[in-house]
Length: 484
Image 1 (cartoon, rainbow, N blue to C red):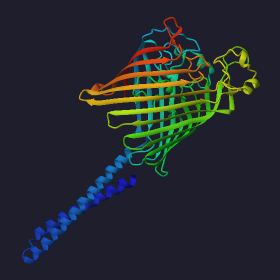
Image 2 (image 1 turned 90 degrees about the vertical axis):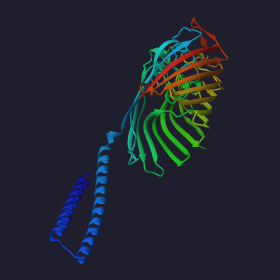
Image 3 (image 1 turned 120 degrees about the horizontal axis):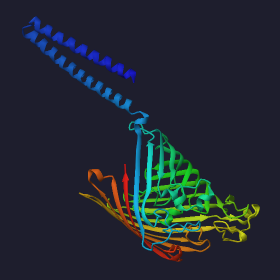
């Protein structure tokens, strides 16, 4: 950089010196009073040469100015100039028409049963406050380099979506008593000049499963369906993203994960996600998480049921999905999504080796025998469909979203509202209206109004006495989102 500045200065000085000499030279010709046809011819040729030289000097000066401008831009494009601070603030009001009484027991959700978010039955809540500090790996002149991403989350919603970090009593603590904060993402981002560019994340981030993700700004709904509630919470490890062909993006992760859904806790796992853009209007996504599992079989009475995690290497757990997104125009989107979760269970021999007798076990969750020698083996699957419409008007953007989901918990293991060992079928229907003003002071604010209906083939929802006497419930939710 110092050499460029020195070179630029020398060039400028030489240019000015040469122009000064030309000026003196031209004045000398004028002072000599050269006359006659030959003299005029010589003077005409000399003037032509001077004009050519002046044009070359002007071009050189322009190039020097361009070099100086590029050097200035390069000097200002340092590592810290590329850091961004972004965030989301979300508040809502939820009202359950059944007016259920909250029951703070380990075996049931509080308030709005089957709600991971907006579980408060009646009242205002700070759902989420996300503060993110990030830097992309490269710069505008060089896309390769090292960046980072850190996201801190606070609020009511995170009390469900955060992982419990090995504290088994976390699952038996009522939602409102859980710590309302978490580090959702914390990773180093490296972009290497390998082929089309190899993107590497090292650290902690959200899982990539399913169409619904814990990203309220990009998500169309106020609430999340059961398919999202049973997915693993976060992954910590190494993640590689590469485009083998322009239309196909592949992500491979080798990580540890702590699941927010009981009773399964996936430890070392492999995550694979594929995204294929078939056309400009149609995209397919699919992937899975597969790996070792442990079970929470404690928190009861007795020395052998004290909330320990017992690992079973013989059985693995699996959660996968596939979806298609069809967007024929900029205003319309249609989504079909299928998800499947398989819990390998825990062998009876593991219980015997640790002195646990399933028949007399009184801890949480209840151990359910699902085969001749396996307990708590589970199968959870479901489908979801979305119809989304949005349009920009002079006063802002209006959007409408219809969501229909159906989930089947074959052995009653994945959802805490169901009785362990009892198969449950759930439906979830939502109609969401959204408005984002175009006015200067409100262009980063979105208002959402959502009507939701949930149903089950068993009475899993609470009444005003705190008893599970309802097989369906209806809620109203009003949400305000602000992003910066």
